[in-house]
Length: 330
Image (cartoon, rainbow, N blue to C red):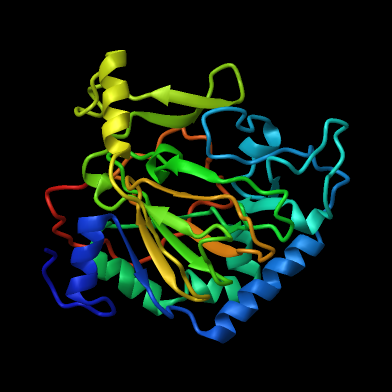
């Protein structure tokens, strides 16, 4: 499907990615690399201060999403987002602070790239990762988007940490045309009982991007419907919307159990989810995204996450990639 000499992936893996919308690459990171990332992540959690934290939550659902300054101004700062059940009705944490953090993000990637050799080695200086990006030929000139450490649905206590509902990443990381590509690396075993990811294979070929997560003109964040001119497959009638969403969700989800250090590549349009953690095992994962840059794709001011002059999204490759993409699924 994609022509040219491959550096790391096999042609079968490339074809599977474009067919299913995701692939799992076993043992992408060494155990030493995994241990270093996990240790550094736990150090960040231990240093998490509650004194200036608004005790807000992070969720991928359409309702009750965070919309304050702490969330919107996270593009160049380390921010800590809590599980949905982390705070009781009196505003107090229901568990120890290290057990209620859903996500460390979103700008954590950028200062860590500059200050922490472990994170920098895994991303900006990882030649294997660059080879994977070139082999996929998904982008011309990609930059990294900071969506860092996720313990989503994976806390030790099974009474906290919700499921991550069905979604695609292009809704939350929108470019025109869609170019989001996720890199998801488990730092611990991911099993059916502790929140392993599940995917709907091929849904990136059939699921139009019908909405995007944006900064609202009056403040905060919300979902904006995408017009037919932006998404030609979208019919704006309510009946057609419901039909499209129902059709997109049909089919059998495939659960991808993973070992520490595996790499899961996720097409921005593919539907995926994870169930609530019912075990007493955590499920830490390191994740980030790549998007294409102008003139190949447009990242506009409506997006909730904005780079800053001091910390722009970092370039991943050197010269722009001369690519020939498949004509479907993008």
